[in-house]
Image 1: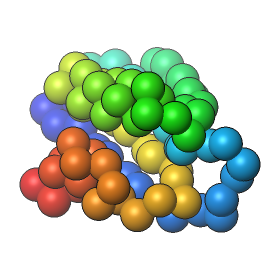
Image 2: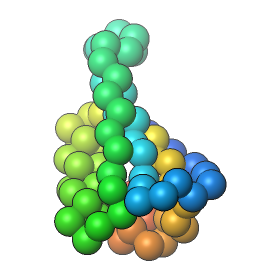
Image 3: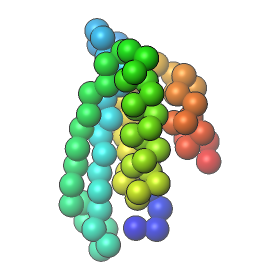
Image 4: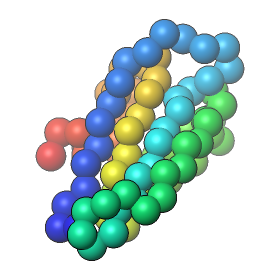
Length: 84
C-alpha cells in the first residue's frame, strides 16, 4: 500500500492498562492479510514499547488503531503521526 492509517479512540479507563492497539497488514491488492492486537500495561516500559511499536508498524506499512483513556498528546510519537 502507498500509505498507512493511524486512528486514535478515547475509551473508558481499564485498570493497569495504558492502551490496546490493533495492527492491520494489507496485501498489495488492499485486502487485509493479518490483524494483531496488543495490550500495553500502564508502566514506563510499556509506554516506551507502544511508542516504538506504533512507529515501526506505520513505517512498515501497517495500519494502527490505538484505544486508550489517555489523551493522544501524552504519546509524543503517536501524536506526531496523528497530526501529519
